[in-house]
Image (cartoon, rainbow, N blue to C red):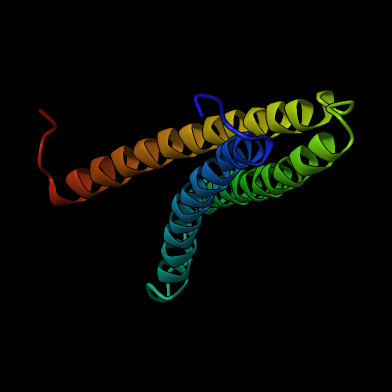
Length: 148
């Protein structure tokens, strides 16, 4: 009565990939919000009036959007790997744990993609911060207000 059954051990093992899928989903959500912000900003620049938008600003927003898209792709692929890792745990158990390397490898690859996507999002956030500073400085310059 003190030990757990093979089925309980398998279900316990399969919970980890499920939690990783949920984490990847959260990252996907954040990356999509960041992408939407960049897209909204570019659209607002395009509708801002007769003067064409600053090409440098557009290129910065383009780079931000591309980083967000790459991060989303990495997070989605990571989530898919975690699902496959969960399924591979069942196959591994059915085959007498001969494929133990498969779920471990898939999970490690997925976690690597989460780290890479997070780095991409960090770079995008730093770019957005720089963009905000540039825009504030430009507004202060136009208004004649001195920077502090």
